[in-house]
Length: 255
Ligand SMILES: C[S@@+](CC[C@H](N)C(=O)[O-])C[C@H]1O[C@@H](n2cnc3c(N)ncnc32)[C@H](O)[C@@H]1O
Image 1 (cartoon, rainbow, N blue to C red):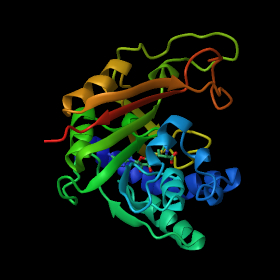
Image 2 (image 1 turned 180 degrees about the vertical axis):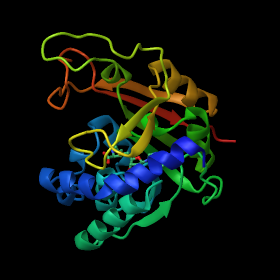
Image 3 (image 1 turned 90 degrees about the horizontal axis):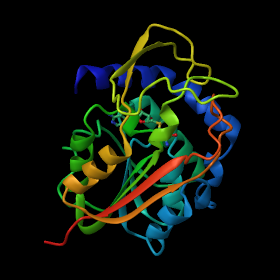
């Protein structure tokens, strides 16, 4: 694992308990198995109609809301995260919900724990790529473990969301669109109220074309691209009128 991913892993392990408290206070995760639309947008959800018994891998599973939604749909789901602490929280919650899920600690750029063609679909997104220093290795590994004909579904926070200075009334660029980083931060474990602390984290700002090219270079054909969402409540800048998420679906060619 490279040193930036190692630093991010240590921070996610340290911040996991606070992240879990945030998810508990939102109260969505217990509802996801019966209300999958809380975790998946309609266009992504459409790929999991009639998915009972299908093998799906979720990469960078975090709060595992997508994982719980898929498990509720009868999918045989595997949850992958770099942070064992994040997986421990998810495993506790899965037990509480009576869901059977396979958990695997791994860096998304090294999925050697899985065989080629092991899954019917691979899903990733919701603020994962921002932690990954090599988007191409990440997506190539994702597609390696996907069966021919399977779908690779990326649903990421839109790159336009990561550019702005904190401001109530003006959009002022802080991070130019073409600056990919790494952006180094010194943070505490108080993930919900960011403040300086002893942990270093490294973030990467991929562009729309970076995402699309990374999917295309895996050899997938492009099935769907969508930009959607307009919730700006959590934002420190007035982003009304800009998209919230970028959805890309690739299909692995049948050999
Ligand atoms: C913000 S969460 C995103 C997932 C989910 N949507 C959520 O909101 O919880 C980011 C997750 O990505 C994981 N992560 C960060 N870097 C990773 C890597 N290189 N490989 C696998 N997981 C990683 C973190 O441990 C964390 O659980």
